[in-house]
Length: 175
Ligand SMILES: CC(C)(COP(=O)(O)OP(=O)(O)OC[C@H]1O[C@@H](n2cnc3c(N)ncnc32)[C@H](O)[C@@H]1OP(=O)(O)O)[C@@H](O)C(=O)NCCC(=O)NCCS
Image 1: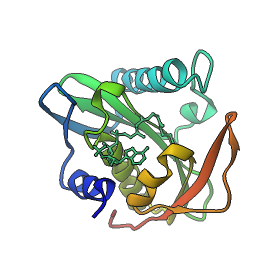
Image 2: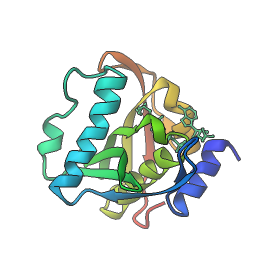
Image 3: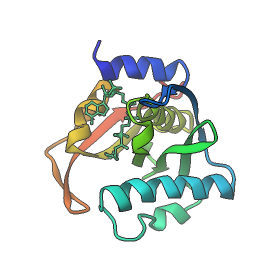
Image 4: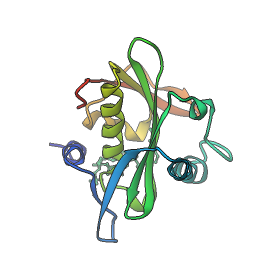
């Protein structure tokens, strides 16, 4: 089993994570239900996609964030926000999209990324989704493949950077 696949298995069994050099921490991933958690979700995304990656200038929020159909998820390690992901339905035929997956540097390689992907996939499946699509930054393609995702077509530019379109089949029972 690959490192990411075993990470996936561990993520499914609970979201235990360890931050490198900081000893083990317990992390939990949940859907955002309060304005305070939503603000923490956005702060994680800004730290990763604006400050670290410069993929967006100033703020990465868009109209999807204001759509009531959009679900925001947050990973919390101890009292600290550590990761985020967003998901939403794209059509009435069961196609969902996941995006803005981000784990703060200090919490990487601790299974939070895998746990957030698993939460997004499970949640969309439970809400009747049939497939989830995502545009994946090329260095992350193997990580997603290890979590069961498949490449769809060729990479293409997205937000000024090459991304690989990928998809995964969803199940109503979650995965
Ligand atoms: C991609 C990202 C979310 C992964 O989060 P993470 O919490 O480090 O991931 P996990 O710990 O769950 O990864 C589990 C395993 O997957 C593998 N993995 C993680 N990222 C990988 C990558 N980019 N390529 C290949 N394998 C990877 C590793 O084997 C890892 O195990 P490790 O602890 O031995 O390193 C994180 O690196 C991140 O936020 N990056 C910046 C933003 C970004 O690229 N977002 C995704 C846009 S498509």
